[in-house]
Image (cartoon, rainbow, N blue to C red; front, side):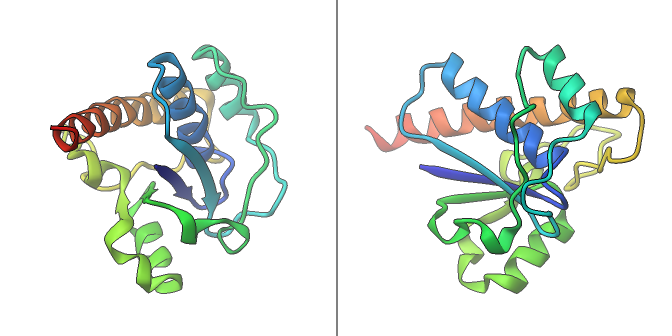
Length: 161
């Protein structure tokens, strides 16, 4: 299974989701999942923000080598599941790639993340904000990725019966 995370610049949210989910599938010894990320307006080769690097270090994850990929330079057509940081990203993906309709969701939508006081569909952009904002964003992504992991395991178990 190939999963892609998408945000605006691929230097904060989707980059963090990418490396966090890779870490989770490795920790859980899950085989057969490839993880990718890109940005709707990413500059190819841009590095993760300093605050994203710092917060990922707090999770024990190195994101220093991450290089942003623009959606137009990505392998999005090969994906089985495309998870966007916001509903506006989802709309942009579908405008560019309408044939991917049945594969594109917001991350929160796909995992049914519906916590009180949180936006129902969007993971807010921490770009330009302080490290605390990045910590909040990373924690929200982490919760969603735990739900994603559970959903994928449940789907796998259901399909293998």
